[in-house]
Amino acid sequence: MHPKCSPEVAEDYFGRDETFCPRRVNCTELLQLGGYETTVQEQWPSIVAIVSCTLSVLGSLLIVYTYARWKDLRTGSRSIVTYLAIADLVTALGYVAGSANYILNFGSRSNTEQCRAFGTACQIQSFVTTTSSLCSFAWTLFLAVYLYLVIVKAKLVLANKLIPLFHVVAWGVPLLITLPLLIMGKLGYSPYSASNWCFIKDSLPHNDRKYACGHLNYEQLLLALVGGKAWEITTYVLVIVLYAAMKWHIHKETRGAGSYQLVGESTVSAMQRADKKLTFIPVVFILLRIWGTAQFLYATSVYNLMYLGCVPNEYAAGFTFLAYVQVR
Image (tube, rainbow, N blue to C red):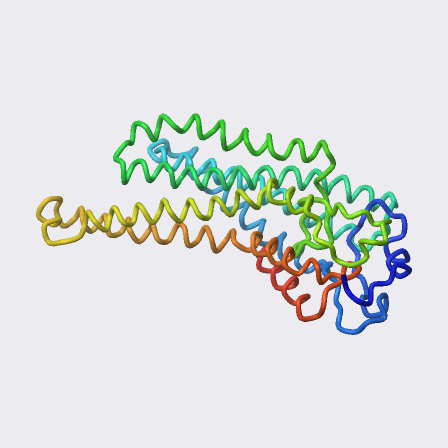
Protein backbone atom coordinates (compact mmCIF):
# COMPACT_ATOMS: atom_id res chain seq x y z
CA MET A 1 0.00 0.00 0.00
CA HIS A 2 1.22 3.49 -0.83
CA PRO A 3 2.31 5.31 2.37
CA LYS A 4 0.13 8.33 1.57
CA CYS A 5 -3.11 6.41 1.12
CA SER A 6 -5.95 8.38 2.62
CA PRO A 7 -9.34 6.71 3.27
CA GLU A 8 -11.05 10.11 3.19
CA VAL A 9 -9.67 10.94 -0.24
CA ALA A 10 -10.57 7.48 -1.44
CA GLU A 11 -14.17 7.88 -0.36
CA ASP A 12 -14.38 11.30 -1.99
CA TYR A 13 -13.06 9.91 -5.26
CA PHE A 14 -14.89 6.63 -5.51
CA GLY A 15 -18.06 7.72 -3.73
CA ARG A 16 -20.95 5.25 -4.02
CA ASP A 17 -20.92 4.89 -7.78
CA GLU A 18 -21.48 1.40 -9.11
CA THR A 19 -20.59 2.20 -12.72
CA PHE A 20 -17.27 3.62 -13.82
CA CYS A 21 -17.47 5.76 -16.96
CA PRO A 22 -14.34 6.83 -18.80
CA ARG A 23 -13.24 10.26 -17.68
CA ARG A 24 -9.81 11.73 -17.14
CA VAL A 25 -8.68 12.22 -13.54
CA ASN A 26 -6.48 15.11 -12.51
CA CYS A 27 -4.23 13.10 -10.23
CA THR A 28 -2.17 16.04 -8.99
CA GLU A 29 -5.16 18.03 -7.76
CA LEU A 30 -7.13 15.01 -6.53
CA LEU A 31 -4.37 13.41 -4.53
CA GLN A 32 -2.45 16.56 -3.67
CA LEU A 33 0.63 14.59 -4.62
CA GLY A 34 3.07 15.33 -7.38
CA GLY A 35 4.35 12.82 -9.89
CA TYR A 36 1.15 10.87 -10.55
CA GLU A 37 -0.82 10.47 -13.77
CA THR A 38 -4.10 8.80 -14.67
CA THR A 39 -4.23 5.52 -16.60
CA VAL A 40 -7.43 6.61 -18.36
CA GLN A 41 -6.71 7.63 -21.94
CA GLU A 42 -8.20 10.49 -23.92
CA GLN A 43 -10.10 9.88 -27.16
CA TRP A 44 -7.09 9.87 -29.50
CA PRO A 45 -6.29 6.15 -29.17
CA SER A 46 -9.92 5.45 -30.03
CA ILE A 47 -9.69 7.61 -33.14
CA VAL A 48 -6.53 5.76 -34.22
CA ALA A 49 -8.34 2.48 -33.51
CA ILE A 50 -11.26 3.40 -35.76
CA VAL A 51 -8.89 4.13 -38.65
CA SER A 52 -6.76 0.99 -38.21
CA CYS A 53 -9.74 -1.29 -37.59
CA THR A 54 -11.49 0.07 -40.68
CA LEU A 55 -8.44 -0.95 -42.71
CA SER A 56 -8.58 -4.37 -41.04
CA VAL A 57 -12.23 -4.69 -42.03
CA LEU A 58 -11.37 -3.92 -45.66
CA GLY A 59 -8.49 -6.42 -45.65
CA SER A 60 -10.65 -9.16 -44.15
CA LEU A 61 -13.43 -8.52 -46.64
CA LEU A 62 -10.93 -8.78 -49.49
CA ILE A 63 -9.76 -12.20 -48.26
CA VAL A 64 -13.34 -13.44 -47.92
CA TYR A 65 -14.26 -12.08 -51.36
CA THR A 66 -11.34 -13.72 -53.16
CA TYR A 67 -12.11 -17.03 -51.46
CA ALA A 68 -15.78 -16.84 -52.47
CA ARG A 69 -15.05 -15.58 -55.98
CA TRP A 70 -12.43 -18.11 -57.14
CA LYS A 71 -13.18 -21.78 -56.44
CA ASP A 72 -9.67 -22.91 -57.32
CA LEU A 73 -8.36 -21.04 -54.28
CA ARG A 74 -10.45 -23.09 -51.86
CA THR A 75 -7.67 -25.30 -50.55
CA GLY A 76 -7.54 -26.42 -46.94
CA SER A 77 -5.01 -23.82 -45.86
CA ARG A 78 -6.80 -20.97 -47.67
CA SER A 79 -10.07 -22.06 -46.11
CA ILE A 80 -8.53 -21.72 -42.67
CA VAL A 81 -7.11 -18.30 -43.59
CA THR A 82 -10.61 -17.25 -44.66
CA TYR A 83 -12.15 -18.41 -41.38
CA LEU A 84 -9.40 -16.50 -39.58
CA ALA A 85 -10.28 -13.42 -41.64
CA ILE A 86 -13.96 -13.77 -40.68
CA ALA A 87 -13.03 -13.86 -36.98
CA ASP A 88 -10.77 -10.83 -37.44
CA LEU A 89 -13.54 -9.04 -39.34
CA VAL A 90 -15.91 -9.43 -36.38
CA THR A 91 -13.18 -8.31 -33.98
CA ALA A 92 -12.38 -5.21 -36.01
CA LEU A 93 -16.05 -4.25 -36.34
CA GLY A 94 -16.48 -4.72 -32.59
CA TYR A 95 -13.49 -2.49 -31.85
CA VAL A 96 -14.81 0.21 -34.18
CA ALA A 97 -18.12 0.17 -32.30
CA GLY A 98 -16.31 0.09 -28.94
CA SER A 99 -14.08 3.01 -29.86
CA ALA A 100 -17.07 5.04 -31.05
CA ASN A 101 -18.84 4.23 -27.77
CA TYR A 102 -15.82 5.49 -25.82
CA ILE A 103 -15.57 8.74 -27.81
CA LEU A 104 -19.29 9.49 -27.51
CA ASN A 105 -19.41 8.85 -23.78
CA PHE A 106 -16.01 10.07 -22.60
CA GLY A 107 -16.47 12.38 -19.64
CA SER A 108 -19.96 11.20 -18.70
CA ARG A 109 -20.70 11.02 -14.99
CA SER A 110 -21.44 7.79 -13.16
CA ASN A 111 -25.01 6.52 -12.84
CA THR A 112 -26.38 8.83 -15.53
CA GLU A 113 -28.34 7.61 -18.57
CA GLN A 114 -25.31 8.29 -20.76
CA CYS A 115 -23.07 6.30 -18.45
CA ARG A 116 -25.48 3.37 -18.25
CA ALA A 117 -25.76 3.35 -22.06
CA PHE A 118 -21.97 3.25 -22.24
CA GLY A 119 -21.86 0.33 -19.80
CA THR A 120 -24.39 -1.71 -21.78
CA ALA A 121 -22.61 -1.11 -25.09
CA CYS A 122 -19.31 -1.85 -23.37
CA GLN A 123 -20.53 -5.24 -22.18
CA ILE A 124 -21.77 -6.15 -25.65
CA GLN A 125 -18.50 -5.05 -27.27
CA SER A 126 -16.46 -6.99 -24.73
CA PHE A 127 -18.48 -10.17 -25.34
CA VAL A 128 -18.26 -9.90 -29.15
CA THR A 129 -14.59 -8.96 -29.38
CA THR A 130 -13.40 -11.32 -26.64
CA THR A 131 -15.20 -14.20 -28.35
CA SER A 132 -14.00 -13.33 -31.85
CA SER A 133 -10.43 -12.76 -30.63
CA LEU A 134 -10.38 -16.24 -29.10
CA CYS A 135 -11.75 -17.61 -32.39
CA SER A 136 -8.98 -15.79 -34.24
CA PHE A 137 -6.26 -17.23 -32.03
CA ALA A 138 -7.76 -20.69 -32.43
CA TRP A 139 -7.78 -20.47 -36.23
CA THR A 140 -4.22 -19.14 -36.19
CA LEU A 141 -3.14 -22.17 -34.18
CA PHE A 142 -5.11 -24.55 -36.43
CA LEU A 143 -3.44 -23.08 -39.50
CA ALA A 144 -0.09 -23.98 -37.96
CA VAL A 145 -1.35 -27.47 -37.09
CA TYR A 146 -2.68 -27.96 -40.64
CA LEU A 147 0.58 -26.88 -42.25
CA TYR A 148 2.57 -29.05 -39.85
CA LEU A 149 0.55 -32.12 -40.79
CA VAL A 150 0.93 -31.38 -44.50
CA ILE A 151 4.61 -30.37 -44.56
CA VAL A 152 6.21 -32.43 -41.81
CA LYS A 153 3.94 -35.48 -41.57
CA ALA A 154 2.82 -35.52 -45.23
CA LYS A 155 -0.75 -36.26 -44.14
CA LEU A 156 -2.87 -34.00 -46.33
CA VAL A 157 -5.95 -36.23 -46.12
CA LEU A 158 -5.86 -36.27 -42.31
CA ALA A 159 -5.34 -32.50 -42.21
CA ASN A 160 -8.42 -31.92 -44.37
CA LYS A 161 -10.48 -34.33 -42.30
CA LEU A 162 -9.65 -32.34 -39.17
CA ILE A 163 -11.13 -29.10 -40.52
CA PRO A 164 -14.70 -29.89 -39.30
CA LEU A 165 -13.25 -30.52 -35.82
CA PHE A 166 -11.39 -27.22 -36.08
CA HIS A 167 -14.75 -25.50 -36.68
CA VAL A 168 -16.28 -27.03 -33.57
CA VAL A 169 -13.37 -26.02 -31.36
CA ALA A 170 -12.62 -22.60 -32.91
CA TRP A 171 -16.22 -21.33 -32.80
CA GLY A 172 -17.59 -23.34 -29.87
CA VAL A 173 -14.93 -23.19 -27.16
CA PRO A 174 -14.68 -19.36 -27.16
CA LEU A 175 -18.45 -19.16 -26.57
CA LEU A 176 -18.14 -21.62 -23.69
CA ILE A 177 -15.57 -19.27 -22.16
CA THR A 178 -17.16 -15.86 -22.75
CA LEU A 179 -20.87 -16.65 -22.33
CA PRO A 180 -20.52 -17.48 -18.60
CA LEU A 181 -18.45 -14.30 -18.13
CA LEU A 182 -21.24 -12.27 -19.75
CA ILE A 183 -23.95 -13.94 -17.67
CA MET A 184 -21.99 -13.36 -14.45
CA GLY A 185 -21.51 -9.68 -15.32
CA LYS A 186 -17.72 -9.92 -15.54
CA LEU A 187 -17.35 -8.17 -18.90
CA GLY A 188 -17.13 -4.40 -19.17
CA TYR A 189 -14.85 -1.41 -18.73
CA SER A 190 -11.76 -1.11 -16.59
CA PRO A 191 -9.87 2.17 -16.15
CA TYR A 192 -6.64 0.19 -15.87
CA SER A 193 -6.61 -0.97 -19.49
CA ALA A 194 -4.05 0.66 -21.75
CA SER A 195 -6.50 0.84 -24.65
CA ASN A 196 -10.04 2.18 -24.54
CA TRP A 197 -11.59 -1.18 -25.41
CA CYS A 198 -13.70 -3.17 -23.00
CA PHE A 199 -12.62 -6.58 -21.73
CA ILE A 200 -12.82 -7.86 -18.12
CA LYS A 201 -14.68 -5.35 -15.95
CA ASP A 202 -12.89 -3.67 -13.08
CA SER A 203 -14.22 -5.71 -10.18
CA LEU A 204 -12.85 -3.54 -7.38
CA PRO A 205 -15.70 -2.28 -5.17
CA HIS A 206 -15.57 1.49 -5.74
CA ASN A 207 -17.25 2.18 -2.42
CA ASP A 208 -14.75 0.13 -0.41
CA ARG A 209 -12.10 2.50 0.90
CA LYS A 210 -9.48 -0.17 1.56
CA TYR A 211 -9.04 -0.45 -2.23
CA ALA A 212 -7.99 3.19 -2.53
CA CYS A 213 -4.49 2.04 -3.32
CA GLY A 214 -3.59 -0.66 -5.76
CA HIS A 215 -4.22 -4.19 -4.63
CA LEU A 216 -3.83 -6.90 -7.25
CA ASN A 217 -7.23 -8.51 -7.45
CA TYR A 218 -6.49 -12.17 -8.10
CA GLU A 219 -10.07 -12.93 -9.13
CA GLN A 220 -9.87 -10.32 -11.85
CA LEU A 221 -6.42 -11.61 -12.86
CA LEU A 222 -7.78 -15.15 -13.17
CA LEU A 223 -10.75 -13.95 -15.22
CA ALA A 224 -8.44 -12.09 -17.59
CA LEU A 225 -6.30 -15.20 -18.02
CA VAL A 226 -9.29 -17.48 -18.61
CA GLY A 227 -11.01 -14.87 -20.77
CA GLY A 228 -8.18 -14.71 -23.26
CA LYS A 229 -4.68 -13.97 -22.04
CA ALA A 230 -3.73 -17.53 -21.11
CA TRP A 231 -4.95 -18.73 -24.53
CA GLU A 232 -3.01 -15.95 -26.25
CA ILE A 233 0.25 -16.87 -24.55
CA THR A 234 -0.33 -20.59 -25.20
CA THR A 235 -0.97 -19.86 -28.89
CA TYR A 236 2.26 -17.84 -29.19
CA VAL A 237 4.27 -20.76 -27.79
CA LEU A 238 2.59 -23.47 -29.87
CA VAL A 239 2.76 -21.45 -33.10
CA ILE A 240 6.47 -20.80 -32.61
CA VAL A 241 7.11 -24.50 -31.87
CA LEU A 242 5.11 -25.75 -34.88
CA TYR A 243 6.61 -23.31 -37.37
CA ALA A 244 10.10 -24.01 -36.02
CA ALA A 245 9.47 -27.73 -36.57
CA MET A 246 8.35 -27.02 -40.14
CA LYS A 247 11.41 -24.89 -40.84
CA TRP A 248 13.70 -27.56 -39.43
CA HIS A 249 12.03 -30.20 -41.59
CA ILE A 250 12.45 -28.10 -44.73
CA HIS A 251 16.04 -27.33 -43.78
CA LYS A 252 16.81 -31.05 -43.49
CA GLU A 253 15.11 -31.79 -46.82
CA THR A 254 17.10 -29.16 -48.69
CA ARG A 255 20.46 -29.64 -46.93
CA GLY A 256 23.38 -31.08 -48.83
CA ALA A 257 24.13 -31.49 -52.48
CA GLY A 258 22.25 -34.77 -52.62
CA SER A 259 18.96 -32.98 -52.16
CA TYR A 260 19.29 -31.32 -55.56
CA GLN A 261 19.85 -34.67 -57.24
CA LEU A 262 16.94 -36.36 -55.50
CA VAL A 263 14.22 -33.76 -55.80
CA GLY A 264 15.48 -31.31 -58.38
CA GLU A 265 16.71 -27.75 -58.17
CA SER A 266 13.28 -26.21 -58.82
CA THR A 267 11.75 -28.19 -55.95
CA VAL A 268 14.54 -27.13 -53.59
CA SER A 269 14.04 -23.50 -54.66
CA ALA A 270 10.32 -23.78 -53.89
CA MET A 271 11.09 -25.29 -50.51
CA GLN A 272 13.47 -22.44 -49.74
CA ARG A 273 10.74 -19.93 -50.60
CA ALA A 274 8.38 -21.84 -48.34
CA ASP A 275 11.01 -21.69 -45.60
CA LYS A 276 11.09 -17.89 -45.83
CA LYS A 277 7.29 -17.72 -45.66
CA LEU A 278 7.30 -19.96 -42.60
CA THR A 279 9.54 -17.37 -40.93
CA PHE A 280 7.36 -14.48 -42.03
CA ILE A 281 4.01 -15.87 -40.80
CA PRO A 282 4.75 -16.33 -37.08
CA VAL A 283 6.80 -13.13 -36.88
CA VAL A 284 3.96 -11.02 -38.31
CA PHE A 285 1.40 -12.84 -36.16
CA ILE A 286 3.32 -12.15 -32.97
CA LEU A 287 4.14 -8.52 -33.85
CA LEU A 288 0.48 -7.78 -34.55
CA ARG A 289 -0.96 -9.58 -31.53
CA ILE A 290 1.65 -9.26 -28.79
CA TRP A 291 0.72 -5.74 -27.69
CA GLY A 292 -2.52 -6.71 -26.01
CA THR A 293 -0.66 -9.37 -24.05
CA ALA A 294 2.11 -6.88 -23.24
CA GLN A 295 -0.49 -4.41 -21.94
CA PHE A 296 -1.95 -7.06 -19.66
CA LEU A 297 1.46 -8.04 -18.28
CA TYR A 298 2.45 -4.38 -17.84
CA ALA A 299 -0.75 -3.42 -16.04
CA THR A 300 -0.43 -6.45 -13.78
CA SER A 301 3.19 -5.64 -12.93
CA VAL A 302 2.46 -2.02 -11.88
CA TYR A 303 -0.94 -2.65 -10.28
CA ASN A 304 0.39 -2.45 -6.74
CA LEU A 305 1.83 1.01 -7.49
CA MET A 306 -1.59 2.42 -8.43
CA TYR A 307 -3.20 5.01 -6.21
CA LEU A 308 -6.84 5.99 -6.79
CA GLY A 309 -6.67 5.05 -10.46
CA CYS A 310 -3.33 6.79 -10.94
CA VAL A 311 0.25 5.59 -11.31
CA PRO A 312 3.63 7.28 -10.92
CA ASN A 313 4.59 9.37 -13.94
CA GLU A 314 7.38 7.02 -14.99
CA TYR A 315 4.84 4.22 -15.44
CA ALA A 316 2.04 6.28 -16.99
CA ALA A 317 4.03 6.67 -20.21
CA GLY A 318 3.91 2.89 -20.63
CA PHE A 319 0.10 2.91 -20.57
CA THR A 320 0.02 5.67 -23.20
CA PHE A 321 2.53 3.88 -25.45
CA LEU A 322 0.70 0.56 -25.22
CA ALA A 323 -2.64 2.28 -25.86
CA TYR A 324 -1.42 3.44 -29.26
CA VAL A 325 0.51 0.36 -30.38
CA GLN A 326 -2.36 -1.94 -29.38
CA VAL A 327 -4.88 -0.06 -31.52
CA ARG A 328 -2.54 0.54 -34.47
